[in-house]
Image 1 (cartoon, rainbow, N blue to C red):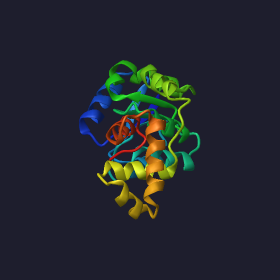
Image 2: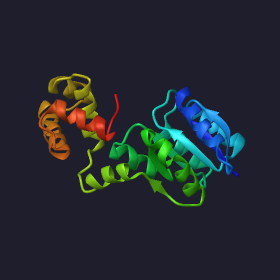
Image 3: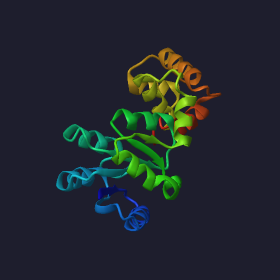
Image 4: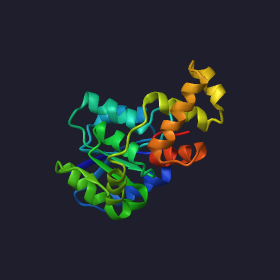
Amino acid sequence: MIRVLSVDDHPVVREGIAALIARQSDMELIAEATNGREAVEQFRMHHPDVTLMDLQMPEMGGIDALSAIRGEFPDARIIVLTSYAGDTQVSRALKSGARGYLLKDMLRKELLETIRAVHAGQKRVSSEVAAGIAEHATDDTLSPRETDVLRLIAAGNANKEIATQLGLTEQTVKSHVKNILGKLGANDRTHAVTIALKRGIMDL
């Protein structure tokens, strides 16, 4: 039997997963968690074969929980389930040790097959997600400082306010903004924020 831990803060999603697994003769749902902190505790308690992990959760998000579990249990097999196809989010999850990445709207179609594949030692990323990664594979990534500037732009700050908050000159901020627009292929500041949110470079 493939023993599964399901982690999601939405009861409807957990119920849907439980119903799918209940109909399988080779799987059983052994535990559920509603946030990352609970996920780490449940993993320690049950040592599941496969963990299904949501990314956006209260208290502790999926990436942090994934890193914490993999830090303690390097062989943990974790599949990320999310509504976000952003390539940066995906790359972060895979770098943290996720063995699979599925969009929630594909669950009915691909979930069971992905659980079996990951349990058998394979990695699985849905085709839509893989296409997003490939599309931006050669893009320049934003530096941590550029990401800070972009977050402050998203919060509605002008260059002068950003300069004050980050201890930079206004000219340096302008230069960062120019780099951000170039790297993201954005027309203006608002467009840059929209692209960054869509790709998972940052969240609000």
